[in-house]
Length: 478
Ligand SMILES: *Cc1c(COP(=O)(O)O)cnc(C)c1O
Image (tube, rainbow, N blue to C red):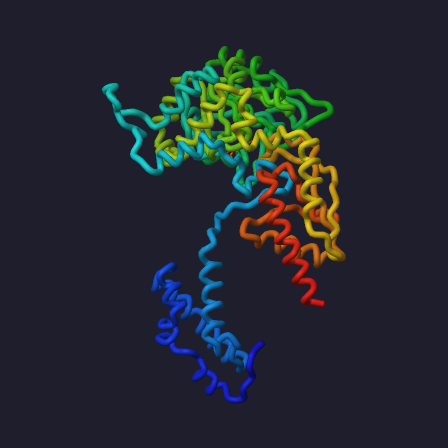
């Protein structure tokens, strides 16, 4: 809706003056909320938009002629820009540990711990009467010892950093042997051969993709070998005619040869997940018992904590990691360490974990509960001629490359539209809600996997808003 006038120059005179805009009472009110300079900058932007329109289309936007319309436009723009980019969303994608949606949601204990260290000074590296300067990882060390039996630990920014530091500190300029079946690529440019090069190690590949034997490792050991590394194939699975060498056998070999046995475990489950109906994952404590010297794993995969990389194991080797210059570059901040400490503390009562860790609560939720949720939702959602909503069985992935073979039975609300453009439009509307709902479009249906829902009442209200808004848009288009 624009007003077309033949003489564009005359149009510029219709633009309101900044000084008069700043005197409008509502604009003064907005300045009190958002700050005067910021409001003025937004008005400048709006006036520039209008000038561009005059220049390109020889017309004036209608809102320019009415002070109330300018105020409304300004307020909308201020609200839009005030929305945090890292706002909360509802993850109904069917992937619980979604890397692009921030992986683990944290326990209340972790949230409280982070809040405290954000607000007040804490003895992060301070001598509290023990006669020596403390170390930031020591807050985690005791707990790790208790939970895994490890003599020591080193905490860094993520597991990729943990693997890099482990290799750089234990095998600089030396050879590290890895099975060809374990040359993993994790999303986002983490590839074992590249990390090896960055750490200054020489990768020695042994065996074949499907089969590697102890004799393969044995034959590859030279005077220049510093370590054998096992890499957990966390995001794929090799099946059929296969052979891998387990940690116990490798540990005996490494011990006899005087080299280190390292393990990149990926997702570190610190408790047997089968007690919650999930597949059991290899655990760091078992690896250490089997004789692995150092094990690395992520804090925000199956552990359910903050993004971090934990290396646990032999004290002498951990000391090398702690004194390596890369450690200073890769170390964690106090918020991460506080969240990690609080999360690890929960593992003292593993049976309580599903009540404490939102990630486990979701993964362990029975399908019957999800079905009840779906029925409750569908009975309360608006019925329209545009969207047909049904309850469908679906599968949830754990995500983050954890347990790629395991799909959990789940229940989705499945929305069908008259055509794909209407479906895309609904998907877009749901992503623009005050708390966006992220689903997944598959075979011309929008799937909302209810395993990702934290609060059914909130979801019901938001869905209702989204559907009503979409229907209104479709009706005005007709
Ligand atoms: C996930 C994973 C990594 C990378 O861990 P981040 O914490 O994402 O950096 C490395 N190795 C394995 C085996 C993994 O599963």
